[in-house]
Length: 340
Ligand code: NAD
Ligand code: UFG
Image 1 (tube, rainbow, N blue to C red):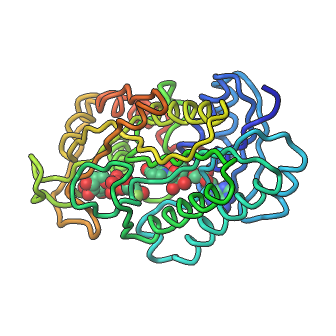
Image 2 (cartoon, protein in one colour):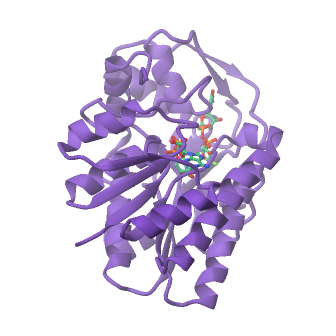
């Protein structure tokens, strides 16, 4: 196929794994990333792993002129849109930055896509759009009611996409709602490398195991779950990346569609189960202390992943053990994460 796939946020955690899969699948890609939450070194690691080059543009989706010139100069067949800010707690402190970066940035991108007549898109949404769904299992038609600013930015973007599709049926849009992506590429060359203190469980555990942090605070053990700690639908990053390739293939085939699709395994694990499994694969002790619940946390939620199976013919392959193994492989080979 002549032309490239534009990947916004392609040097980030999910974008880097997906970019590698796309290169391996034979696609030409162009990554656009402002490096606000990733490192330039990621680009070289992807190239090395894929044994294939691609173009990297250090740029910003909020920069309309830059987007215009990219769409004018390059032949782009579709866009996978990862770029965005994603820290729930920060989104409450910096709402303007979150709305500007996520909503205004996405709006710019969609406007320039429409002007350039590029109407194929895979978008990174989040299970956080379900908010507090009232029951643990989330289906795509579960009512959407995000409870944090980050989630609200995702819902606004989803709504914009629903409106675009309604006004112009030529658009093909797959909106992926990720549950809890964890793990790393099995080579240990790319992985999750949060800047500053991690917000999420798996990078915290990995950094404790490598000696960068002392202990984990477990946020509550009195939830209505089998061991009292919160349960989540962790999904291996390689499974997440594969689902993007499947989504892209679907929209490039010409199916005119607009789909919201959950990406999860459908099987939740508790905080204590994650700790135990990580300890068993790393042979490292993870010291932890039970503390009070974190504001805004739910006891448990997980995906109904059946739509992804039906539409994309995709199903998560990897279990918690493999997620922990690859997280540890990445962390132990890169104790300080990416250097540059
Ligand atoms: P990430 O922060 O690792 O990657 C996002 C990338 O986008 C970064 O490289 C960052 O530098 C870039 N970026 C941010 N704002 C930009 C802008 N204005 N212009 C250009 N580049 C910009 O995050 P991730 O975990 O890879 O997440 C990717 C997407 O998936 C995000 O939209 C996130 O909200 C969504 N998501 C992530 C998770 C998760 O747990 N990781 C869960 C649900 C949804
Ligand atoms: N947890 C702890 N201690 C910590 C960190 C987390 O006990 O230091 C627990 C949480 O209470 C929760 C589980 O580990 O039970 C997972 O927490 P994460 O922060 O890793 O993940 P969340 O499910 O809370 O949030 C993630 C993303 C959000 C996204 C949300 C929706 O971080 O961006 O999933 O799917 F919005």
